[in-house]
Image (cartoon, rainbow over all chains, first blue to last red; front, side):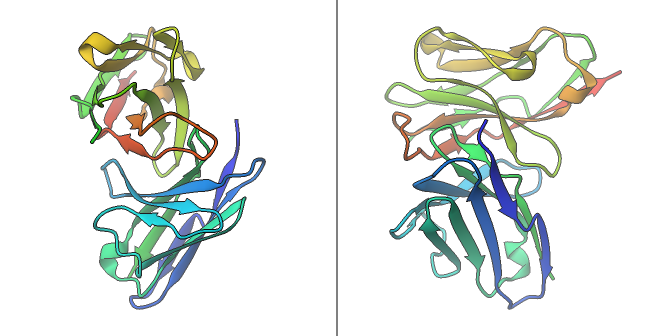
Length: 111
Length: 117
C-alpha cells in the first residue's frame, strides 16, 4: 500500500515554544491530508483537513491560530503547534488519500 | 452526523481462539466503513474496507468483516488469533463517497485486544 511518513516521530519541547510536524506522502500525490489527535488510551479525533493550495478546514473546537496547517505541495502537509503548552501533549497522526493511509504518528511532549 | 460505536473496550482471547469485534455505525446514507489496527505507539494500519458489493470483506492478516445494513453493523472477525494480534482496533466510517481527494473519518472508541498464551 501507499506510504505516509511523519517527522519527527517524537519531540519534547518547552512550554511556549512552537513545534512543526511534517506529513509526507512518499509514493503518491495527496490533494487532501487529514490531521488527527489521539490522547492516551483514546480514539482519534479529527483536527483539520489540509487542502493543497488552499486554507485548511478545521473541526469545531480546534483553534486554527494555535494549530497552523500548511499544505504547500501535493506530497507535504505540515502542522505547527504554536506556543505549545502541556495540555497540547498528545499523539498526532496524519493521513492521506481516499483510503486513508496513516502516518506512524508523532508523539509531542510539552514540558 | 455519523457516529461509530465499539461496545467492547477490552477483549481478552486465548491464542488460537476466534475473535469478533463489534462495530455499529449511524449514518444516513451508504456508509463507507473501515477497520484499522494500531500497535502501541504506532500509527494505524488498514485491515480492510467496505465501499460496496459483497458484504463479506476479506482483509489482511486473516481478518474479515461483514457489513449488515439491517443491523447497522460491521463486525470484524478472525478465526484463530495469534499473539501478534494483540493491539487496539478501530472501526471508522467515512463521510461521503470515497474519492481521490479523500474523506474525513469518524472513529469508534476502539477495542483493545489482549491475547492469552
